[in-house]
Image (tube, rainbow, N blue to C red; front, side):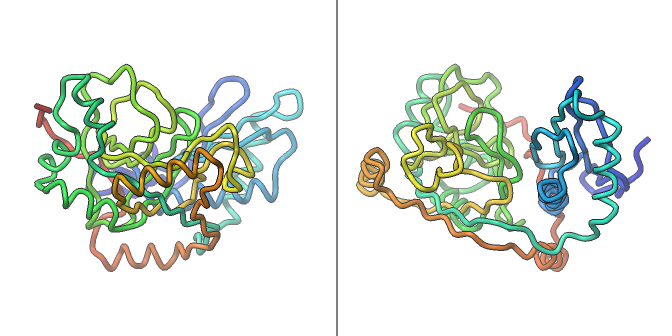
Length: 301
């Protein structure tokens, strides 16, 4: 049985990380079974440490909300060597004080026609109205709350360019359950909730997130037209802080035209985030650090 700190909501942060085998060429380092931003700080700190002190044979890393995936070359190293190296880095780490963190401003047209089209096509209520009712809010309050704080990106994945993020202010955490039957298609660039996870569909794909807005900027751009994609076609990075900005249809169309022309200037600010101060602030706020999916039997109309 794994020992660790038991949380009121049933989650746990392990005393010692758990190493899980992922086939012949990968392992997963698991720090707990809860969704927690402070726990994610530890994941990202280990990821940065491995970039600076990479063991022989390590191919790539994949940080997520509570785990760090490690892919290795079995012809150059072994699972045991990778684990020994990682355990030494973890032992030397201590508490996480700061992390590199970009702040990315994401404009969005809320309660947009494309989200409503999806809802109508699959026979469910306009999703932003469902989100509002589920959280005892108005549609205006949904928009105000979603734009009211930064969202911490805990990991990138699912489909190319997709990411998982969580509200950094406990009082502004909200969301809605996934569709019971996923859609067979979703328009690209639609904002959505899956529980309290806030993300954006980067391309047209199936999905079950509750849709409530659309951004005119690219989240995944294989053309790499903007300097924001100088390092690759994916905009989001683990450790980013996303801030959403509500815009009208006229501004949406203007920004979209600039994006398609390759002239839009993405608002991305490099910086460093004070993780220790944030953890202290959470403790003073008297709110649990973990983010949990809402539990409900409330059905879409």
